[in-house]
Image (cartoon, rainbow, N blue to C red; front, side):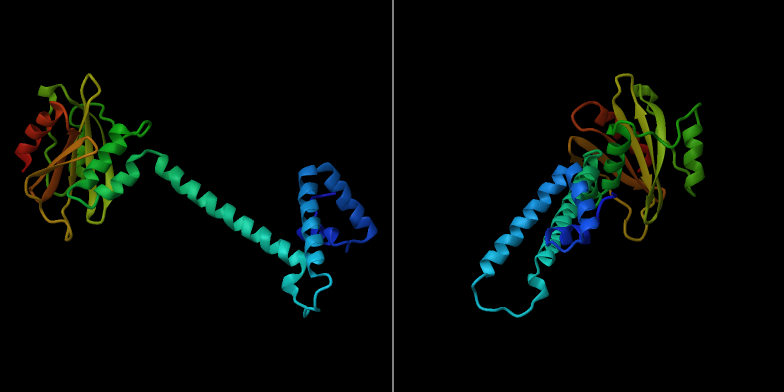
Length: 248
């Protein structure tokens, strides 16, 4: 037979199934020993409950004390616990897609924290690809020009052997932000990030901050906020500082 319903299983345990249906459930249990073991546990619970009530004072008819009702409540609690465990695993799994997410949410509340988050996503997360991969010089500059009302001059890092390898747009409450990623022959990455300040993000004075081994150097100019993000412990930071200077 097909898998019996929960109602049939409870009726089987309590001896309330007729001969044909009882035989069908018995055949199903013979083919599914793990389910049969579960029903045997139900039967033991029912016997213990009846034994504990035997010889005591008569109790009012209470449906909540019915063994089938008790088993249903226990099954519902088990399902609820499994659902909670699954949701926790899902949350941990989403966080594990790249450890940058949780750190990024915390960092985004600080000046240009979104620039650090964007760097972790595009420069450090394996398999993440940019929206645009340049085929020729000027592709990324034209791409920036299309998405910002005022011209945003893309830094030229060729003197330090860094070449632009891609760009990505990000959504903010104030409008589109953009990041251009540069790499050198050794694979080191520096990013240029630009965003509109908007009503909640004022133009920024020149500043810098270190988070998780990354250095964000930032400032404002021409109505936009800028950040250059690099590793904090090497000469890349000096390259980023020189690139930021003409913009602010």
